[in-house]
Image (cartoon, rainbow, N blue to C red):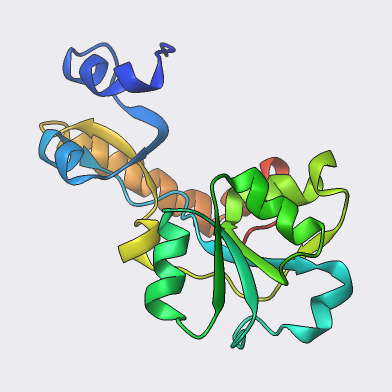
Length: 188
């Protein structure tokens, strides 16, 4: 195992400095031409969060007319504009500003990356203000098709072994155990 800077991983893998890159690489068109990718080991859903005192007002599906904070220009803003135009979308320059608008009560909800929100919800900056509402939003066109392990294209046997291992982790419940260990606030 060798530790490399994230941006150096593709070149290091091509230079045979390792057998696989396991660092949250997304399968982009450019990387898909250079490498083969495993089945996803983690998907990153979009999630709504609301103030804890408002949790009973939101069932996770009906938000019509709700003022929702998002980061300006983000994939989450694009998703809401395209898929939920009935919302009152307020775009903020930064995630911190969008989250603060929710925490302070300037908006009724915030929509963003589920994993990042799980850390915010359990961290000091949220001041325990908020909670997830039911339902992750899994839309590959906006949120990608998950994080995968990259291998050189000629390493088909290794790719099969990695996919087999990922399936076995899932079947035996080990994947769920690892998930709970590192993500105590589930983002699904």
